[in-house]
Image 1 (cartoon, rainbow, N blue to C red):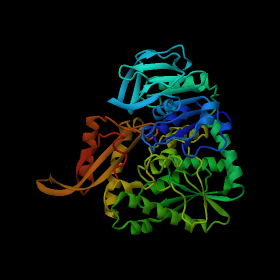
Image 2: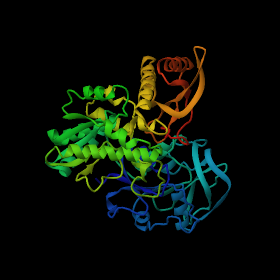
Image 3: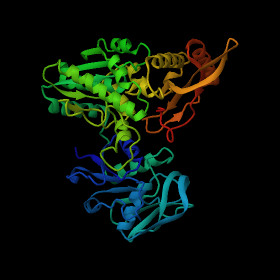
Image 4: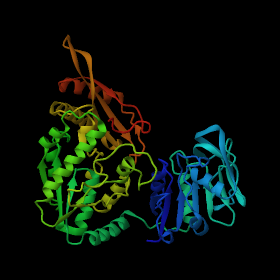
Length: 510
C-alpha cells in the first residue's frame, strides 16, 4: 500500500487524534515513534510531525534526522514539529512571554496558499504550547497569525513543507479537518480509498496468510470489539476459530447467559466457561487498581491457556484489542507518550503460554470498529452496545473485591442501564455504568439510622474514548434512578452523579 500517511510521534497525547482525523478522510495512516522510523520511507506519500511534551530548546529533546523526509515528501509539522522545522531551517524558537494555551482566532490568513484554501479570518484554532516561533526560518512564508501568536503557520518556500503552531486535529480547531484535507488531498495528492470495506478485505487476506491452517482461540466479551474481531476471523479462517467466553464473576447481571444467547446463530463456535472461583481467589485482598487489572489479566491468560490445551493445533490467541487500549497502556508503538493505565489485553503473553497473539482491530478506534462491524452485517443493536471494560466490575469497585460487593454493584448497574433504555437515553450515551465507592455514609430509612454504601453513576459522550464529556441527564431521570436504587438495593443509601470530563478524569474511576 503506497497511498498512506506516516505520522511521527514525538510524545503528544494528541498524536492519535491526528490519526483519527486522517482516517475520517478515508486515508490510511500509520503512527511510528520519532526514534523508530520505518526502514522504507518510500511507501509513504506524506508525513505529519506531531506535538510533544518536550521543548526544542532542551538539550535532551527529540531531534531525529529528518533529511530524507524533508527532501522528498510533503510534510505537515504540528506544534513541536513546527518548532523543530523552524530550528532546522534557521528560525528562532524561544520561551513564550504569555501562556499560549486554549482557543484563539486567526487574525491573518494567506489565502493564496493551498493549505488555507476556503478558510477565513476569524477561524478558531486550539493552541497548546509554552514555546513560540519568534523568527521564521529563512526562505519561508508566513501563512497565518493570531492576535497573540505572530507565526501561527508558515511554509518552506519551494518545498511542500508546512508548519502549524496550533493543533488542527482537535475538535476546538473548527476548520482543522478542512485544513488536513487541503494538505492531504490538494497538496499531497492522496486518494480517499481507505474504507471499512477495504479494511475488511485487506485484513481478511492478511489473516489468511498469517494464520494459515492453524486454529485460533478468541476471548469473547460480548462487546463490540471482540464480536467484530470474531466475525473478521471467521470470515478469514472459518471453523478454525474457537471462541471462549469466560465468566470471571465480574460481569453485569445475567450477562454470562445473555451473551451466550446473543451469539446463537452467528456460527462463531462459542464455548462458555465458568472461572469465577479462580478470579475471586486471585483478587482476594487486592486493592490497588493497577494490581487488580494485572491480576485479572493474568487469570484470563490462565483460563485461555487451559482451554487451548483442549484444542489440537491451537497456535494463536486472538483479542479484540483496539487503539485506545494500546495508547493508554503504552505509547502507541513504543514511543515517548506517558502510560495512563494498563489494559488486560495489551502487552503480550507470558512465556509459559505457547500461543502467538493476533489482534485484527489493534489500529482501529471504537467508532471505526463500529463502521467495520456494520460493513460485516453485524446486528446494529449489538454494534450499539456501550463499551464495557475488559476487567468488568472489578475496576468499578474501588478497594478490594468480594462476591457481596459484586452483587450490590450488579443490581445498581442493572437498574441504571435498564433505566436509560426505558427513558430512551441509552443510544444518546456513549458509555454508562455504576461505581461502588469504599465509603459508608449515614442515612435514615424508616426512622432508623443506616450506615451503608455510596454508589456513583457515570454517563459520558465520546467518539473514541480518548476524550469524553459527562452527559447532562434529566433531573427527573436521576431522581427516579436514585430512589429505585436506594429502595431496591440493600446496602446502598446514597447515590451521586459524576460530572467530570476526560481529561482530566478517566471514564472509569479506578
